[in-house]
Image (cartoon, rainbow, N blue to C red; front, top):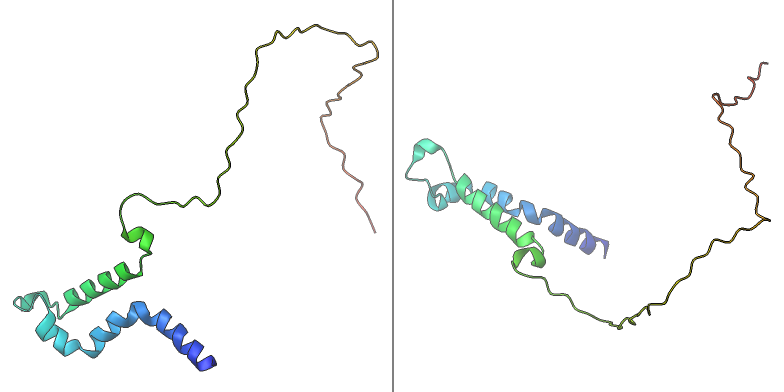
Length: 123
């Protein structure tokens, strides 16, 4: 069971490297038959153009489906609940200033210029 899991994990991890391994194994065939620039030997391509196309194709295959399809995204609505509408009726609001004698604003603030530091322990 563990060997099967390891084999599947290796296949998943090595999937992007498969075109490079194929290029290394079949180097002679790709350089002589599949190379697009075999008429121009001064370019020293040796099948690297074919390798680049295969790597681009592998990268395109790895993209998620949402990135492959251009266009608008479709979203499914599973639950829907209509929100109640609120209507405010215009009423005259009378604001009057009521003084409360029992309320005392006794807040004070001391602006200290230094901070308290505890004494240094000397042994």
